[in-house]
Image (cartoon, rainbow, N blue to C red; front, side, top):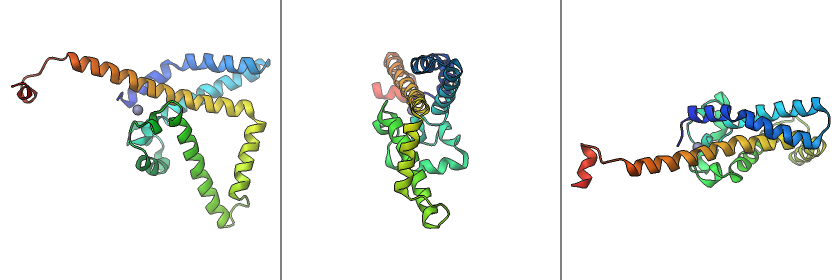
Length: 186
Ligand SMILES: [Zn+2]
């Protein structure tokens, strides 16, 4: 598995490429250059968040996990539910999809508690409806955010796969070292 620093570097290096994707997406949806630039910046910002904090490595005690600060506690259950680098955390589609639903689920649970304590007056079903309505009314915003989260996480998985592939090749070519390992060959 590539280190957190490697992932960070690749996320930054690929950010112009991500900017190109968001520019094209928004260029196809709008003719207003201000709108296109604003959504491109938002897309890149969320993409970087996706790589730095929302990647599959929140499934272990990683750099990404620790960046959540006191909020990292929310990922404890996630780490218990899914094993490291499983398709549920590192899958190109399942990984980010489950994480988005997971965070949203936690948000709903907290709101349900606040509702039970009379702090807020929106029930869980009303909140879900409000979210759906917000996404419907802000399609471009929602689409950019979702694509950005998938892109940031996807790049992480791709890096892990490439890293593992080359590690295997180089490991296979390595000659047996002296000492402990050599015993296996005797
Ligand atoms: Zn990983």
